[in-house]
Each structure stands twice: as structure tokens, then as C-alpha cells.
Length: 206
Image 1 (cartoon, rainbow, N blue to C red):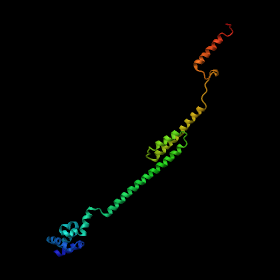
Image 2 (image 1 turned 60 degrees about the vertical axis):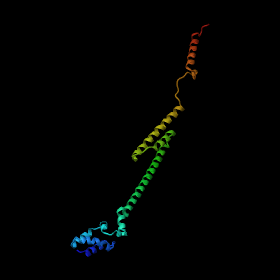
Image 3 (image 1 turned 30 degrees about the horizontal axis):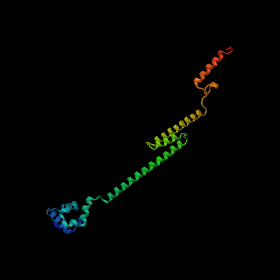
Image 4 (image 1 turned 30 degrees about the vertical axis):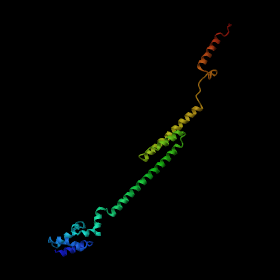
């Protein structure tokens, strides 16, 4: 296969390159005396990157080679688009997850407020709400158990308050001498002694 035939194959393979710039390469390949099949195989394997050493320097400044050099360093447009879309999707998923977490927390807070609304101890209500803001629940079942426990706590707290109020309104009555109600123990002892002396001298003239 001669130089002209190989140059024809190179021109067909690299139409963006001036045929005059491919002549040195065609000469080099023709010097190997390839047959038709060998010549076609050699040209088919060549790439723009491989023929740079055989092309004159001025040809390297053409648009074809400039594009080749930048393509080796710059990711493809498709890759850039995929990376950009992946970042946007990740950001959107993070925002959506944060929004769902906030909504779920507000819903649970409202449920707790509803349970605590029946509690008559204001201090217990406020402390429970403050504690809830620092709590984390691994699942919906964990929160359901927590809410159920709070319902029981509210019932117990209300019962304790009711018992205390009942005690304050109706204190227990102890057996006391009506005449000594409000009298100290020392005074009560003195009164008892005086009463005993009166009984001992009763009916006698002094």
C-alpha cells in the first residue's frame, strides 16, 4: 500500500485535519510496506491524540486539536449535567427531610399539649413541654408509648391534687377536751393539778 492510498485513508479518517498535514504520517506508514488489509487496520486504530506527533506544530492550533486538548481535561457536558442534577436532588431531599421532621415534631407537640390540657398542675404541664423539646424518638411507636405514659402521669397528678385539696378542706378531728382546746400542754397539766386539789379538799373546812 503506497503513500497516496494511505493518505486517502487518513483524510477519510480525520476530515477535520488538512490533508497536507497528514502527509508526513502517510509517508511514515507507507515505509512499513503494509498490504491493503494491514494499512486499513493501522489507520483504523489511530486517534487524534496519537497523530499529534506527526502533525506540524501550526496544525495543533486549529480548532480540532484545541478541542481535543480541552476534552482531555474537561468533563463531558453530560457528566456535568448529571453531577449538577445529583447535587440539586440531594439538596432537595435534605430540605424535604428537614421539613418533614419539623412537621412531625409540631404534630407530636400538639398531641402532647392536648394530653396535658387535662392536667390541673400547671408546673407539671410546663415542665413536660420543656422536656419534650429536648427529646428524640426513634419511631412512632416510641412516641405513642411516651404519650400513653404521660396520660397515666396526668391521671396520677390530678388524683394527688384532689386528695390534697380534700385533706385541706376536711382536716381529721382528734379527741380534745373542749375546755383545753388551744391550750398548751404545760397549761393543761397545771389545770389538771388544780382540779385534783379541789377534789381532795371538797367537803372539808380549812
